[in-house]
Amino acid sequence: MTSPVDQLLSTAEVILIVGPGGVGKTTTAAALGARAALHHDRRVQVITIDPARRLAEALGVEELIEEEILVPTDSGRFWASMVDMGRSWDRLIERHAPNPEVRDDLLANPLYRSLTTRFVQSHDYIALDHLVDQADDDRFDLIIIDTPPSVHALDVLDAPDKMADFFGSRLLTWLTAGYRSRISQVAAAPFLSVAERLLGGPFLADISDFFWLFSQLQPSFAKRTAIVQQRLSAPSTKYVIVQTPEPGPAAQAVELAHELANRMHTPSLSVINRATPLAVGAITDDELASIESHGLRIAVEQLKQRGNTPGAGLASVPAVLVPETPTALDSVEELAKLLK
Image (tube, rainbow, N blue to C red; front, side, top):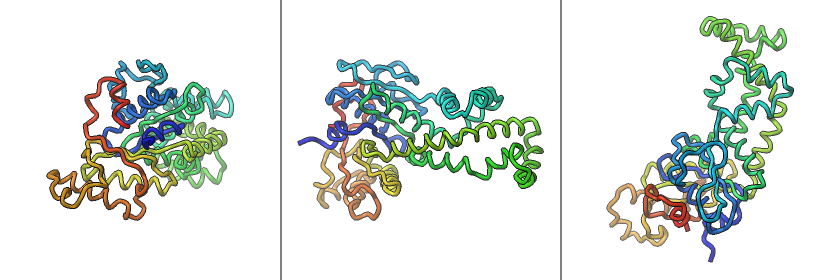
């Protein structure tokens, strides 16, 4: 009988790994990628947007960069990479600028690099934009993306809508009032007056210039956003929640599953790292009472009750229990055996 892990790896085209921080999410992404490449003969790329850059160590490569690095395996079908936000921003501008003049002016704006580095709302979207590019690359059969911790993972999933909202926001209207109609200028005058006193006229002018140019990307950006949203909702895009039995991560995972369900993304798999090797469903009340770890006891109770938790989103999701902490694995072959 095919395991839930192998069924997932044999059918998915995109897998998003989500969950709280510190639960082995990055290593889980690497383990799934290794198993897909070694046991399913799939051409797989694992992408991380985790700034800690732990994936390279798990895969045995020196450093992750934006260009795909071939992970040393016998299959020769396993790659890994990391999103480079600076270069991704440049590509986003080049892709969506309506003409070469807007493109060049944006890239030459003195605040361009500083603003895009701090424009956190768009970073999650850029990660998804990069994911779509890779998913459409014929060199790969499967793309696995390791997302930030749970609250940020939700930001990733909501990024297309948030970026679309930004283009229609009052803030953008204020910042670009000098380029719009006389009515817009009058309405924004109080805001701009305060901003000039706080920031200085030349600095504010550079900001306004940047966001005016940025607003010109909206028509092309809207079309691309629709493509990104379609990819997130596609039947071949799957979601894996990673957690540990400790009360905090377990509760966050339940909440994350609930939020995923609200967004019409049903998880395909739940990976519970550092878990008891016993099957959760087979634990009796007496066995539960004998578990010494308070955190594990609470987590198992939550797991047993989850099917009756309204909106939990995990009632029918298969769970994989990983008894060992996956931090000392030093080969891709060991990674591939971690999840079965």
